[in-house]
Image (tube, helix red, strand yellow):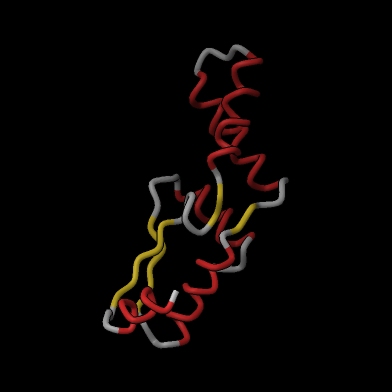
Length: 102
């Protein structure tokens, strides 16, 4: 962690990925796909997205606390921080509100 802090202290901007970096979500995606496949919907991906959002809202999320702490450290050190993701804005907002980063 000390080496990482040395690197961070020399940077003005720090980017954090949301899925699988700040929050473990891969197992939730897998669960949503399994549930969607059981229903045999016409559009598997769309149904999976609906189920995944429901899971995000209802289940406890598994956080990477050491990286959440690092994010908060960077903010406290007046670094410009950003959370980046490839997920939908609705999923990202749901997660960030739930973990109190939004």
